[in-house]
Length: 121
Image 1 (cartoon, rainbow, N blue to C red):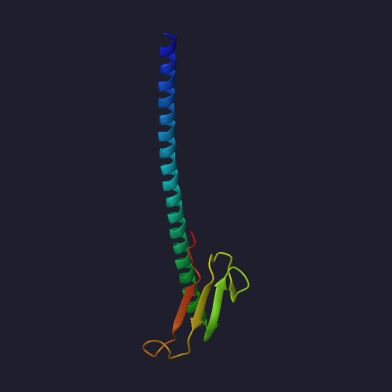
Image 2 (tube, rainbow, N blue to C red):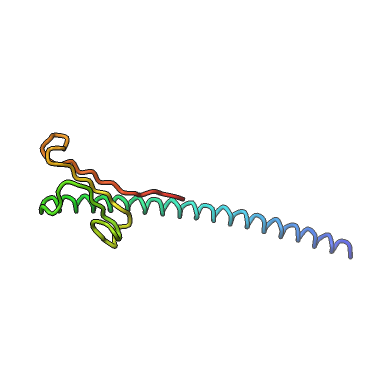
């Protein structure tokens, strides 16, 4: 009777250890999926923010050209120490305005707008 009780305890211990290993493996997989989705969400959010920063730069350039405030040249739209300082702009936006008649059809101005968005996981 004494030996049989020790064997049963050994089997129960083995079952508990196996159960803990399975639960730890599942937790590891779930955590990996959550982190992967978090990185993907951050990347998508950054891309959207960069898109809207460039869109804001485009609208600003069109408005400055309409009012005659800007002419040809390069301008920068960013958080601080730029041509246009705006705390809501998440990325630096570069705006280049060409001379009159430098567009594709030769009538207007060529406007080039870009941002320094880069994704580093």
